[in-house]
Length: 239
Image 1 (cartoon, one colour):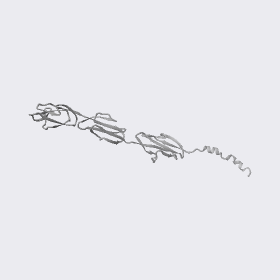
Image 2 (image 1 turned 90 degrees about the vertical axis):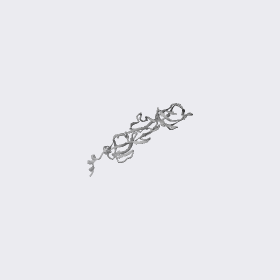
Image 3 (image 1 turned 135 degrees about the vertical axis):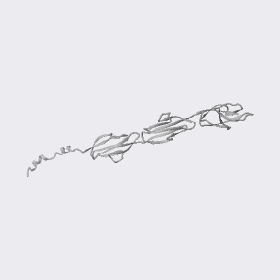
Image 4 (image 1 turned 60 degrees about the horizontal axis):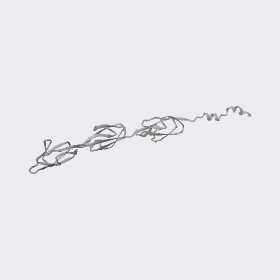
């Protein structure tokens, strides 16, 4: 019929209006903070268009390593997050073991013995130092400062503990005696602790060696005699 379509003229769709009313779907990505590091983007909430693939990078602090993600079973780093729904993720950082290095200067032993040892962070490690004969413990140095042979070091980071031993020096005094001489000659001599000093008595003509005295008490009848320098000593021959 002529003009039959005239009544529908007002029903023609406004394409521009329809297009302006269409809005792409968006989703929210929430990145939660975690101890031991941070992320790029930083922790927070972000809006992305549906279908966007968002890379999230976990950055550990010094002394930590990236382990995994909470909210996503993958361990990729950076992690590509497909925005097909609202999502929430959080990185997991693991603290690295710390290393204790034990060293010795001088002559002695330590517990733990010299070497490298791994501990969980913040472990309290007992240290002890024992000098060898003729030596004395002087100090701990390095990451710890102490003059006590037994101490504790807190391993909040990798550290070095160095035990310093110093050699003890003792004095050997050989008194003169009537009827002979000695080798070394009568006098005072210093020796490192632990040394064995050989002393010989040489009787003069008409005399015989009888014995050694130490501080007035009988020491030995051997000639020569070995004197262990583990203390200050005063000896004299008797002819």
